Image 1 (cartoon, rainbow, N blue to C red):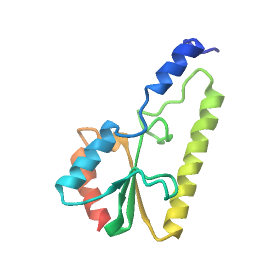
Image 2: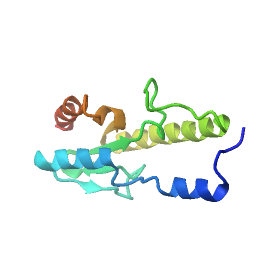
Image 3: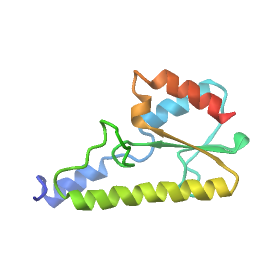
Length: 137
């Protein structure tokens, strides 16, 4: 089955998907700042260029989109019916990169925390953020 968009429209659509300053990421950053945590963003020198780095606590936080990071058993992750094999390979590669980056960070003495966008939806947001706060210490 082929794509429903032509190459130019698909390219434009994909270019509009943000990888930084997403709503879930901003939500976490605002929560951390309001609770007195100071952080750095997207530190290039660390494996995986973590979304949020808390140097004082030697902790990094990845805020992942459920679709792009293949969040298992999540209603926001569904493999597309077109080009399924291509998408499956792409998402598996992302999952493997995530695991390798976490392994390297842990080996370097960093604590890693991964959050998914579904954990930051209104019905789970408060418990997720409170748990995050306790996991940082």
